Image (cartoon, rainbow, N blue to C red; front, top):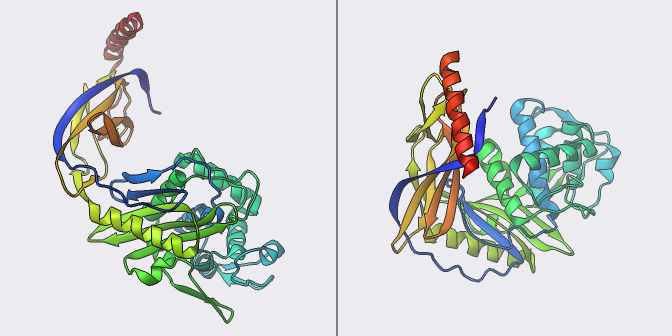
Length: 382
């Protein structure tokens, strides 16, 4: 179990690197938006990203996340035959025209939900994974909490209007990023331009799939109150960006504004590897440990996204939790790496222990207990 005594942070200046000047964003005609680089996770531009919005069919991004997780874990099989309930058969909105009592392979139902945003497909999947839509929605909200989606609450799995159902552009962006990073094997389904079932062919309503071969997903939505919404990803020159926008005036407008946002992000920035996986940033003192220091860094390659032109200083600081008390486990959060341009924090990444540190013998633990007592006494006095 993690054992940290928090309250003091040690800030370590790691480097001062050349950075680039900010680039001007074109006018984006949407109520709210955000765009991020997939590798670095950095948000490159946003407006009202934490404002409460009606997610509409973008709700299905969370439905898809839980379904993908079930497929990956084997709890749901791709060729498993799913039964369609009366609830799924009778649902409102977009449909793939499932028939009650007629079994359908799970992978077919998943594609119906992803490609044409079929509500009957979403409910059928929710019932298959959660037992009922109500139980599935509870899982959606639990997963939202785990992801840190603090401005999101779900009432159904489809995105149909419901009192108490809300989200934000920032939360939906995090969710879209997690979909892409956690389940890359299923991304090809988001990119399908059409879907056929039971003799009926329907087109994907994401117009960018038909206009830009670099676009590979994710979803669109619409509500009377919220307008036209879009979550979209695009790859170019080994870079991938994800954008979410809501409140566009039409399906044509959301495509145009989404394209504008992605093109700006892809052409105006470069993403570079800041540190390789396993690179040691610093050694942090450990109390009561078999070793006096623990190396900290990242278990995965760490990237930073910077504008493509100009010059400016980028300061890299490590805020490390102090004191750290054994046992310490590999992957345990030890602090935060901050990238600062002037006084502005432009990115943060959690820094973790790169090795385990077991507890020391009783005598060493006793000595360090005394040292910690003095440590806490001193800082309380301050």
